[in-house]
Image (cartoon, rainbow, N blue to C red; front, side):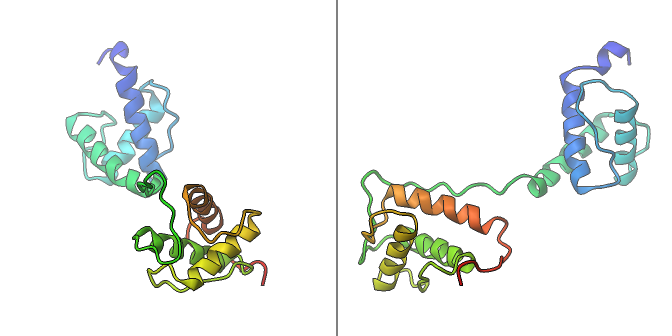
Length: 180
């Protein structure tokens, strides 16, 4: 292949895929995608080929390209963040004591998770019902956040609750309890 054919977007794509794969397979050298099929790229391709039972030529032929694409798809699942949960919160929706809405389960679960990290928030049972205990927990959260203590979950409180949950639960590992 002529040198002019060994540069550009396809090479950068190859390098980017190999870089992702190297995050889950330490046998693959880490590349900086520069779009140039140089010695580091050949080294990474050769290492990949050997790891996957392909002839270690350092050339990204069709079989190698297909194997790299497949390995990249698998590696991406491991290294990329989990897909976010995107709920439809209808305009004007307000959850309150007695509400019969599946989002109540999520409110309870997030409050319960936050309570595992911050002990100064009143916990609630995971019942799926917006009962008095959940109302007290919502009011407790509102008080801690300096909000009016209405016991209602509107979109503003929902967004604040989601942000707080993400911030304090991180990767889901249990952390020490603060405030107890």
